Image 1 (cartoon, rainbow, N blue to C red):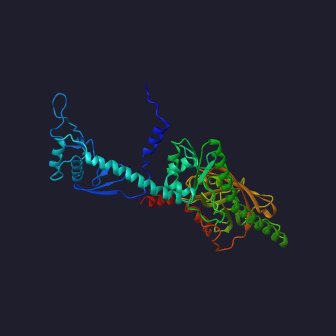
Image 2: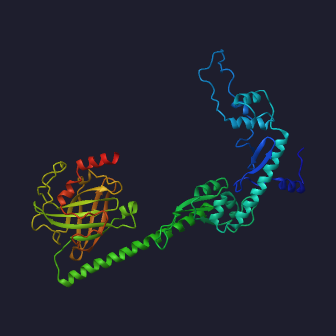
Image 3: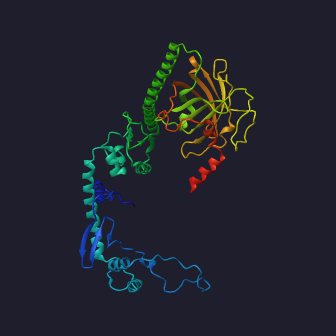
Length: 464
């Protein structure tokens, strides 16, 4: 028949329970005995860095090689980890054996003995384990009580923090038992691991940027809750705040660009300028590229040039689309003009050319222009060899042709739409518009230097 314990017995058992060992916040206890110095960190005696090993005989070398059932020597002998002299000495001391002699003599003593830990050392070990745990717990509580933020407590002891904050395990000193806690800490992995066995919902989320624009050291937060619905609601609130703050510089830039565009229109009207002049600086918007590769610190840009070369007039553009940058070469839509090539350009019909007639230019009568492009990926600067296979387009519109819309296509962006506003005229020698736009002096050479030879030379330099 099972024995039913009284409340007094249960209380007595609870009082006998030792405090948890981890985390350890104090140095080991030391004790000097006739056999030398021992230390204890609450989980057994150590001498000097070795505990009592009840399976010590498993580490003894074989006196004879292992054999098969037929009595022949086994090809593969069992692996036995070699132990240090300090280990063998410690195992002898724990058993009351001499610690003098060679490794072999110490091993012989242990091979011939079935002794466990001596009664005296076992008693000392039990006493020191209890003493260490109590002292460690007292200091740990002192440190815990001095921690003035959730983040500090979570770093000290993730499990204890979560048990207290959500009133788990009988803890009664929390105000977050039915809510959510958000922690701005680098120690998220430890909290994720501590939350799992407690049955708590947990999720890491990108933190909102600081309102002053300074990059925060903690760029991700962890959200923990008892319920999935409460966690999801908090994560969505953080996401909305992040997007709101991220939109602030974008909205400011949009306002600035709109003012520059309106200024361009006003100046043109004031001067009586009627003809379109699309050359100059443009701000580009491409939701598909910006959402996947956007950088709020750098806008998508386009700089259009109309150049007179030895071959004739050419309309070119430098573009920086964050993930790609390079050169556009324009061709009037529907033209059948002969196209110039570099020596390695064998990909297109010679009926297509970048050379324009004297009257070829964007106008209300000819607003749409096709273009091909060559360029490189922004990260490692890999030239996009297949880029000129795509025939893309731009359509100019609005007052003085100062607005545009277009189609851009690349291998890893796919076919995307973009729009733009002209915000200024291009001044020769100006280099502060985009860090990746070098300003085209010779458009033909800019085009030709992105051929297969250049690609292969860059490939070699990347790997050597």
